[in-house]
Figure 1 (tube, rainbow, N blue to C red):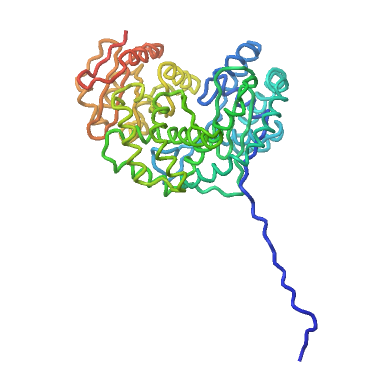
Figure 2: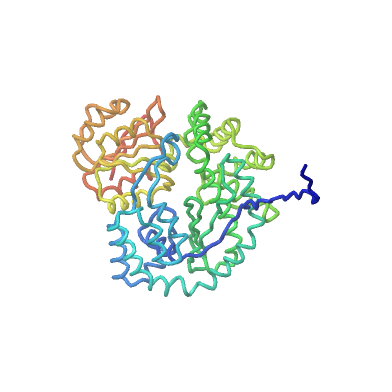
Length: 480
């Protein structure tokens, strides 16, 4: 018989589980890439920073770098299968470039991170463009504001313990899985000004955020922006099942306002949470001023706020009951939204014969000059199978820009889009004009701009702006 004189020793192993974190980082590589995007007027960039860059960068340097960047293809798209078409199913390699830039310490590190995302030829060109921009960016923007950047980074890091609980509650509200091991990263870049337009854009788990270096309340503004933009990321990263459920709940609502309540939901929720609920918790009182500089989003967010607050406070996740109330809130707030061009063009499919990426960006910029466009999708050429399929089944307004091959294109649309036959059959083109139509079955709005050349687009947008509302009894708007 064996005997053990020593007692058994039980060893308890404690695994150190990762805790959710929010990190504040600085990356001049991101600053430079963002500046190139800013110079070409991309969505989510600062108008104030663009004006400063145009004034401070030598004209020839700016023109050459911008032209080289615009000629470079950085965007290849891929689709998330199985997700509702109303959500962000089309993703882009540009997002991957932004994520890499936010993490990169220098251009060598950036090149290592983006290898395989772009063809080598394009990758080499991008690194070359950034290398030529670097001495100017460092001298004019990064180095003079590095002290301010470091100070705000330190201050914002100290606020993280107060923001983290809000992030966790927001995760529950959106029904979004987020591993504790994945940090949420705030990447700062300077906008050297006292006042002006800031911008913040989310990419994956990274928020690229500009701030006014001389603004006395830069920290307070940044806290609200961070919570707001975190909500956009949580909305985008909802589970596939949650996204399909949400899509189905909106489709089941029989209100004609449901597509607009749905399209504004992402921004409305982010504003209600970030600028309403979050601000109230962090500052001890609800902000009674303007929450968002778009009247639709500002009003919608405030109408959603009581229900949003209740769900967050009671740790509830968005459900069908919430969707029904959201649609009702939008309908009550905007009874004329069904016919307002300002609303109809807020989320828009753009169809054009133009296939040059630089010219397409100019088209989008022209439209944005007259209307606030939050989301846009461009399809070219107009009569392609892809374009016609989107015209039939795609969500949001369909803006069709016919500036060449008029008869052939309109005939093809007439053959394929049955609901447009009432306005296209027997149509004779006698001058530049706009034709509008609402499909009674789907609720889809079509705006066909018949232009004699591409330079007529600004006048077409001015005509829509002057008309203000779509008239069901008058489908033709002349372009003067």
